[in-house]
Length: 156
Image (cartoon, rainbow, N blue to C red; front, top):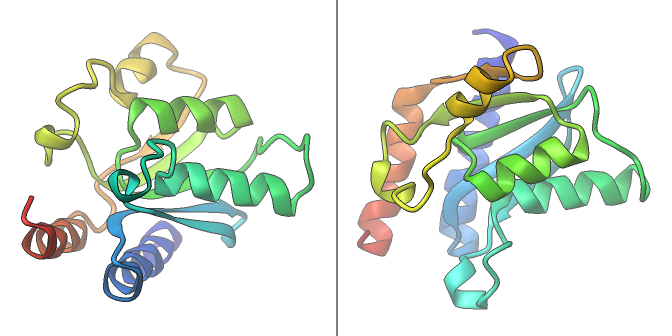
């Protein structure tokens, strides 16, 4: 197993735990540097809280910035996500300095989660080929199983 796969396995396990213990959605994220998990975030069921920014990626970014002290950019850090980040999360990660994105499933796997997002990471990659690194489909089958579990639980 590669280091990316090992971290993704931990992330998918974390997402399963959050679905069970916190009634969360499966969109979870880690901020990682040099193989060390700096922060974790899970989707706080944005509809239940009425706050559309409570995505797993946003929560992980906020926690990383807070733990590393305000004003610190996350250049050199990676965003691991169970699913390709939405446009808002992707932009927030870029704004914070993150330039490496690793995810399990994508908009290709779950187009209904992305139907209101006309722009995806692959579009940014094409427009800015030297700015970001993207590693897709890490433990994709396990990611699909995670989302299947969530679909059964929440009736999506």
